[in-house]
Length: 109
Length: 150
Image (cartoon, rainbow over all chains, first blue to last red; front, side):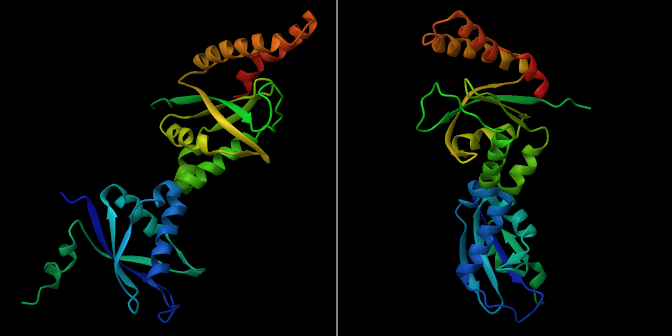
């Protein structure tokens, strides 16, 4: 079994033309959310941002299996991005990167 | 209802840059707040919420500089992992040394009695009169009040 999880998620603001989000700040915000809920011990874990789309504010994260639940719960509770209200929407999660490619919901018959 | 299990942690507070025999005065809640702050830093909001129930930390003896913590079994691991990282209590630079982790106050007091007796014997070397020794003994070896405070 794979020892990491891949998370496809996007950052949403109430204002659709809200502030521009760079990949570095996106990752920083996720690490801060983790630090707020689970402290420095948990935020020291290796989380990688594999891909990030600036326009859609959507990215793919890789996280070790042992910290997946912690990351997911802190993403749920994260509510601020640089002082503005925000929320994370998790589109898809898979233990394999290829699993994010598509599923039966996206089939065109 | 299942009963709550507790853990009692005995601590030694060493002030950096001062001799081991000098008194160290601390206010009652300062140890509690120092531990809580460090748990918040290392284990976040989750850690604070986990330890909050049944958490008591008291500084009990300024002669032997000991403190005692009562906490629930389980989250005591979060507390014991934070204790070595505490450097400041009330603007004093200190280091905390864990002496004993016990499941009952009885066990803790047993350990504390032996520990204080050892310290008392060390301190007595520098004292001359019997009155001074008796006074020191009275201060160091009284446990009755302690049980009420926890």
